Image (cartoon, rainbow, N blue to C red; front, side, top):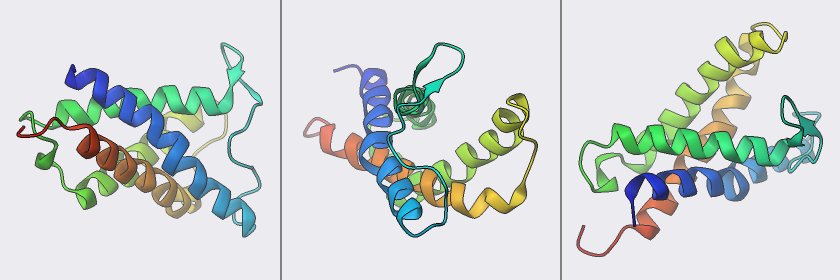
Length: 136
């Protein structure tokens, strides 16, 4: 299977299987006010928020695959994938996405973003490793 399709699929599913469960735990403990798997419409297309997040997780999965210079996912280890998700995705959200949505920059949310997006990174790595063809 095409490695870019694998990257997108892994990133998409990592939102559902790793990212959103961490959001659920943080919500259950009162750390974040929003629940996981939100069906609230996300602008501009009006799709459910969980689907929008999963789509962008797939796009970031493509970026992660592009960073891997070889065909093997072993190029990135689990902790590097976690750091990639925790740092890169959180900084892009804080410095680009939130200001575009009028939310401004708030450095206090970095630890929460790091946990949620780091879980996405490790989840993407787990799925890519599980789907990697034998001997590659």
